Length: 357
Ligand SMILES: Cc1ncc(COP(=O)(O)O)c(C=O)c1O
Image (cartoon, rainbow, N blue to C red):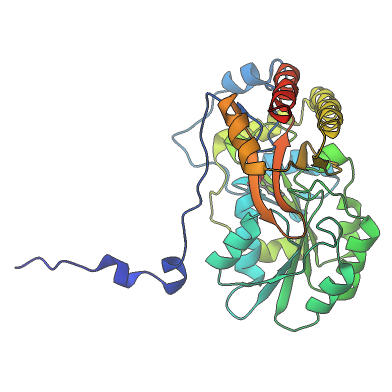
């Protein structure tokens, strides 16, 4: 029989036809200050403890993540029934929208904020409603509440501290949104360990409040893809319906369990990262014609007079920084995260060189 030449593109869903694949930079030869990671190696002994375990990789992992959830419960004070684990917190954003979003439903975000919310909205056919931050930095609670009034608004995402601005929003403002909107309010606390502020204790008061956390930042496990979602058990049970059965692999589960035995070592790293962030901030503030925004996370947003030129000058000197492009109200900005102390010293020297060009 004759083989038909199939028009594969013709079968693609219309939403997918419009998508451009997400591009990530992988430049291991550079000093990476572009992804808000923890630059320190794991606490001493943790790697050895993890690699010396007998792990049955020929078997599927515990799909419920029972032991990991027990450890997260101890760390957060939320019972296991109120925890969902994910293949990075990225996956959990998708699961939230698969549960509460979709065609004809909308999600409210506050640009500038984390770009993956938009991407998962597109994948789940959820409409995005943008309520820009006031002056690019502060939550516009009034306008968010207004946007939440329509019945199709189901989800509202607050990123706290916010990526990429570093702003920490007042907890009362977020709680007002939770109380008065009545919608599903997701508070993304990816950087909470650096800000040392969390809304976790409020979960017991609000069935519509869910909190996203990750092991990628303070716990230095970006490469292992491990995140979790906290909420009231009935809310978590709904989202659990759309979770793939074995979404978190065995190795990442074990690493997560182990890391929570090293909290005091991680706390030491967090303190160091905070001190390094301050050092970078102070150095950047000394540069003329450069705006530096306040931060409560492990990264800094700043605006030189020619961000594209600065980004390429950094790259020439071996530093990968995040060129944020055009941000609402703020214009073109760059974002850097704190590296190792010696990397930061070199970075500060590069800043002085570039500003003198
Ligand atoms: C605000 C925010 N949320 C979520 C994530 C994703 O984290 P994960 O590595 O857990 O998918 C990031 C990563 O940069 C982030 O900045």
